[in-house]
Image (cartoon, rainbow, N blue to C red; front, side, top):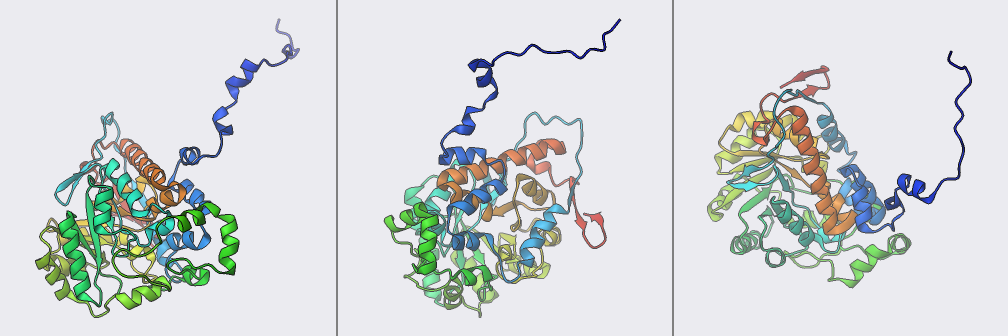
Length: 419
């Protein structure tokens, strides 16, 4: 007959070997950069690390958008509205993430987008990003507003695929010279950004008093105490300056308004098409009409983009415009998209909805601020891991098979799903 008495275990003193089996000694390791990055499981984790490691004005420059940041919020909401439709009993033991982008193989359907003032985020700047991109086998796009010249970037990282991003300046001759230099240095794609007749109102930057380069004042001195390593790196490496033109002391918006030409038109694109013999991409497309117009003028690709929500607030959400642009241009041009991408699942969603490839900016800048070159590596590792897992769960063995009914974009107004 079973006893109702509770079982009592004999007590004993724990041995050291018992403790070593249950204590994770790695958790007590010194907080090195490698340790911090290894603990980051998502781009959100890298964002949190970045926020602690750089001055607030620098973080807000990367993280923020225009005016009330409505476009920024809508971009993230669009990815949350995606519905995946997985297939089961498919062989996904091996998954192919590579895809041909503008005639050349890329190991991921991802392009690192152009970002200005990159050495402000980390003193190694564009060189760190280009090296990480080369290791990952994906293109890196150098910005006109970059802090490393087209020639110096190639000298520092000669192996990876490089694109060059151009704004239409008031000084057309200076812009033409940049194009010639990029061509001579071996850049294989020119990306023309067309959504900046003037700078957007980035209120975080204005409230933070951000200047390029950062100026030292009472508020800055307090910030230096909180971020001594960032300031030490800034002050002990080459002066932070623009590589494509002379020095500037003012806000980013003032600089843009002094350089960019609000009178630019479609003839400028046709002229560039005649001067650039390789792939030409137009970034900043937000309507089907404009997509058709630039493809008719010779563009090999378009980027459906509202500048990451940093120009016109309340602009159309790129992911929602993407399927319509894809249908309009067909196979006449490749269609890329940017804005709001924070995971490999987001990359999969964009490809499934018709994108040839996805541009990411903030995603890798969080990694750069969190840990320099190693932080960019970590950001790309996270994207790769998440994209691989998403494809396997969707029952898709290769990225080229993804645009086959595997995702629909929900209509937040109607509450249903639509292709």
